[in-house]
Length: 233
Ligand code: SAH
Image (tube, rainbow, N blue to C red; front, side, top):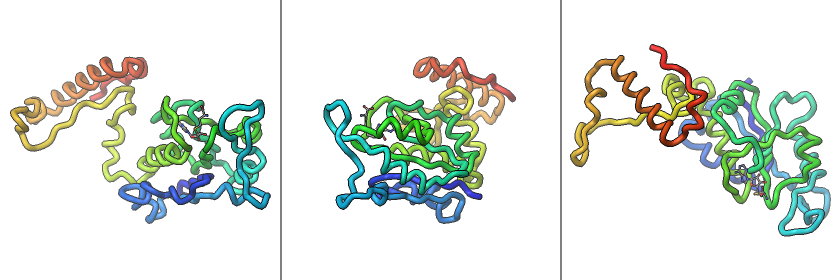
């Protein structure tokens, strides 16, 4: 079974969106993964197809209703569905490459996209939703966050990335940011490609890249260094 994503949203037209192009788009066409976008509004029961209501306790904005969302989730993910149920949420655990790898190794994901002020807390508890954040900023809705998560996952699915090795050397895979890259021309506006990279000495090149990666990580993301793996080779 290929990776199956079910996205619950008020804007199904946003999918597959950017994921219909390039690597992810080709993999979607090839059946390496599949995507269904489900309109939450279809699970409302009143004449106006209402999905939200005013917050208990007062205050600004609207809250997505637990009963409507529960019907949508139960439709997308009936009992026995092994896929994790994710809620895109700025209060969630920040998404990491490690979690992305786990998701890519699994059967898929059911992803709920919030809108307005968010969703009723009882829904999160009753359906065991895992809240996932894509960073410390506020989006207007969970849809772009779901696209980001799926993009990161899909590129790891078997056969999607042409050169699997490039995946393993990337930023975060070994607890380090990646070293800088260069390509032709040899000289650009008076700047040369570092000599070691054109030396043909692969051991020296690996050591240089490792040193650059460590320097960059120390400068920009010292928090990552604790988890860094030693250089093998
Ligand atoms: N009132 C909320 C923000 C709601 S933003 C708060 O202060 O925490 C509306 C929706 O956008 C959220 O329900 C969530 O689904 C999505 N969203 C916003 N920022 C996000 C982020 N950084 N990561 C993941 N989803 C996010």
